[in-house]
Amino acid sequence: MPVSISRSGRRIGVLVNYVGLVMSLLTIYLGRYLGWHNLFTVVLAATLLVTLVTFFRYHVRTGLWRLVHTGVENLDERQRQVAHESLRHSYSVFSIVVLAILLWQAVASQYDPNLIFIFAALLYLAHTLPSSILAWIEKEV
Image (tube, helix red, strand yellow):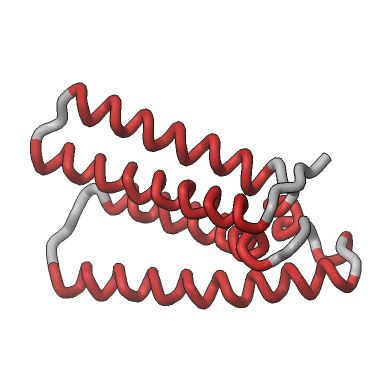
């Protein structure tokens, strides 16, 4: 059964979720460039834990993840419209982020073996943006 969380609570949760994701990526990159040691392992574990906990609390337990990943034939008209709007906004944001990263990569013109982590983060972003948009804008879930 979906959990009801206030809109401000969902917004904070979504922000913490993405901050955790970005901090995980920064930790991986800093560890690579500064020399990996135990501190980076602890920070990475903590940031990944924050990301996972907030993902389950604000995307899965609220039912928002299921709403935007359910087939359109299983949704009523209102749910279809809400899901459509969140997908429209989220993929617009996603496209801008991906283009900015690709531009940055083209300017840097260096191959980076850690691009798989960026790819994984972008894939995560693509799947969580629709439910994040709903968490951000809907008064009740």
